[in-house]
Length: 101
Image 1 (cartoon, rainbow, N blue to C red):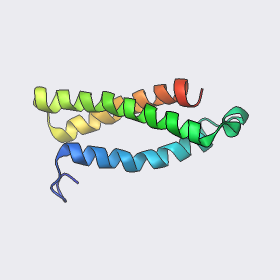
Image 2 (tube, rainbow, N blue to C red):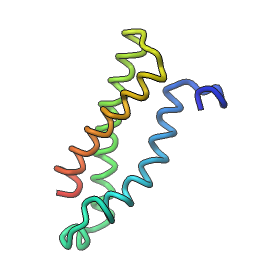
Image 3 (cartoon, one colour):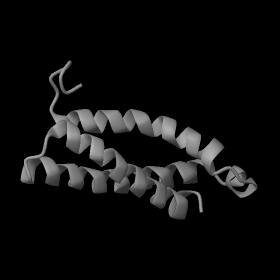
Image 4 (cartoon, rainbow, N blue to C red):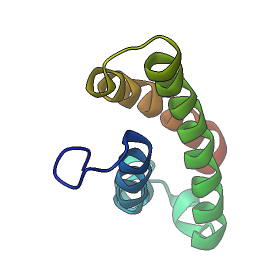
């Protein structure tokens, strides 16, 4: 999106993660955190907690890439790549201990 559509890295980052979260919730609920207890919980309650967890993880990741790009002058592509790991770790921990506990 940054090159082909000439979008700022911030907009590209937001759009990419919004689309990915729909897929992420389905995989998390029905494959990663499969249990009888999770199957009986309200999908709306879990979706709400999942959304909060994603927002928190995104905030951590966004602050990280902002620090790298705008404050330290890092390459935007490299910062986005490294930010994937920051987001993934944060999101896993939030979902493991909040959404699907």
